[in-house]
Structures are given as C-alpha cells and as structure tokens.
Image 1 (cartoon, rainbow, N blue to C red):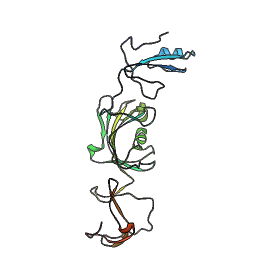
Image 2 (image 1 turned 180 degrees about the vertical axis):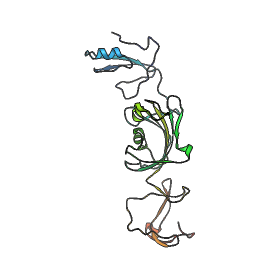
Image 3 (image 1 turned 135 degrees about the vertical axis):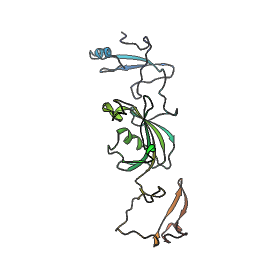
Image 4 (image 1 turned 90 degrees about the horizontal axis):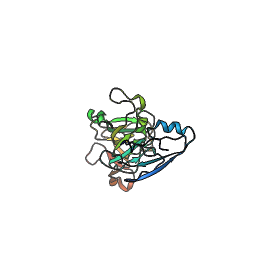
Length: 251
C-alpha cells in the first residue's frame, strides 16, 4: 500500500547522509525501514509504523548536495552534522588537541540565504578559544580538531551542532544550518612582538625559575630553524652554543 508519494506530487526532499540507505546518481534505491521507522514528511507513515508494519521507501537521487567551491565533503561527525570542505591544505601532520588554545580567522554565513552574521576578518582580530571545552558551538569543537596549521576549510554545520532550536540573537534563526569558513592560524602560541611577527610555542620541557635573559646577554642555546618542515639552520653539531643576543650574528 502506498502511504505517500513525492514523485506523484512533483516534490523533493532533502536528506542528510548517514541514513540507512544508498543513493545512486540517476538511479533508484530501495530502503527497508524496520519500525519504529521514519519516512520524510509522512505523518501517516508514523501512524502505520506504530502498528508494527515494515515500511519500504523507494528513492531516486534528484541532485547531490553542493558545497561552496564545488569540492567533496568530509563527514567529520559521521552523521552529516558537520561537513568539511578543504580550501587550502595546512602544513605538517600535527593537529590541535583537547584543551589547546587555538587561534582562528572565520566568516560565518547562513546556508539558507548566504547572509553573513559574524566575521573575525571584518574586525581584523583573530579569535582564540580553548578546544573541546564547550566554549564554542559543538560543530566548531568537532571541526577545528581536524585541521592542520595554516589550513583553511568550509564547514557546513547542522543546527543540532550549532545553535539548535533557540538560534542566536537576531541574525541566526531557529534550526539554522550554518556555513563557516575557518582558517587555523596556530595553537598554544603566545605573541612575543606586538606586530604578529614572532610567536612563542612552548614545547614539552618547561624551564625553571622566573628570570629571563636581557636583550644583550650572552646565552647558551640549542636551536633549529625550519621553513615548511625543512631545516635551514641549527646550532653547531646540534648541541648548545654560546650566542650573544642583539647582535648581527644572533640567529
């Protein structure tokens, strides 16, 4: 018995990936939904399902979801809640971890009409937050954790990974799907200069005491400089050497 047909009424439905079905381009796939089941938009189906029936839905893929830029989607969460499209590859293999202080630039728009509701770039001020602590929407915690340093990506965030039924302020309505272009600048780094030229990222070994060398002191250091992962300078024999700060010979 046919409960409802969108084909007959010329309608289409948008489905999230991750349902128990296979959609074939230009073809038809059969989906068996064991009760309690769900068929898009069919209240009669829910009533029928409550009686213990087995529902079979025949679906034809009208058109796949297009991401901004036309690239392929990476399902970050496995349920279609956060989809990722890489615009610019990052460097290295390291990813930020939970509790890391990550620094990003972002632009947020509504998927429905493309209107912009927030942008750190408009303020010329990167945004820093502690990853995995619920300081931002769930979609951000999930998505940024997959990024490398310098990577730029577009994340399509379903409402349950965003602001849900409540929305946010006047610009984000209830149950809105959000699109964020995010660039991961760095994490766990402290700005040393005031112009963004030098950042300090502590490694595993911490120093002792409270004193710091002055600008013209002589110090014993072991160092290594890299560009895009390639070493361009290092201390002699990869060991400690004497360096006078503030001089032309100082690395």
